[in-house]
Amino acid sequence: MFGFFKRKQNTLPTFAPLVTDMHCHLLPLVDDGSKSLEESLEVMEAMKAVGYQQIKLTPHFSYPRFPNVEEQIMERYAHFCDEVEANKGDRDMPRMTGCTGEYNLDDGFQGHIDHGNLLTYRFADPKRGAEKGLLLVETSLHHKRMGIDEIIFNRLMDGYDVILAHPERYPYYDSHSSELEQLKEQGVYFQCNVLSLDGFYGEVAQRKAFEFIENGWVEFLGTDMHNVEYALALRHASTNKKIIKLMETTDFENKNLAVI
Image (cartoon, rainbow, N blue to C red; front, side):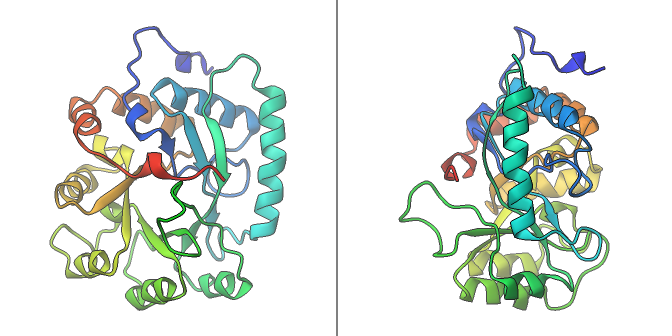
């Protein structure tokens, strides 16, 4: 079924300059991502074929749909690493270099703050970044939640750097958004989805993703990988001439993240 993902000699490592994918949902059965170890293995093999050397897993923390708990996620991640090592065989796959989280700024987010064990990234250079690391957050894909600016500002004051996931997918933001400009002025990082650049989420998200990059707003790119369908789309994106040119001419921060 998954033979389509076998590496071919003429496969170009389009995303090799990024080194690391810092946004994917391949920890099985914890959210709407991978449904099995085998699916994760096949998808990771596909990711290596288009240039990714490392990946960081980012399961959803979203109430009430995915009420994950940090300690339980880290236990599952440790077990998953063992399973991958035992079952990967001769597959050529990216190295897993940590598990963080994608936190929804919803009614359950304050509970994670109070719990005090948020899963974050770090820059490889210890002199870079906030004391408590980089926190990946998202918000509703359907309607604007009131108070987002204040929630993000409070996290900055708490000693975190904040990465806003896929701003191009939020229908209430565009390239002329004063709200996004304010977030950039506060030092918030933006992460666009690679698949947005290839039209996977529609023409509007595609246009906004390129506009945000042209504005100089985007520091990170992520696959937001969930399953085999996304892996097929990633392979298609790797042949997109505009994306190939972007990889050749634009420097993103993915490669500067630390191994955790």
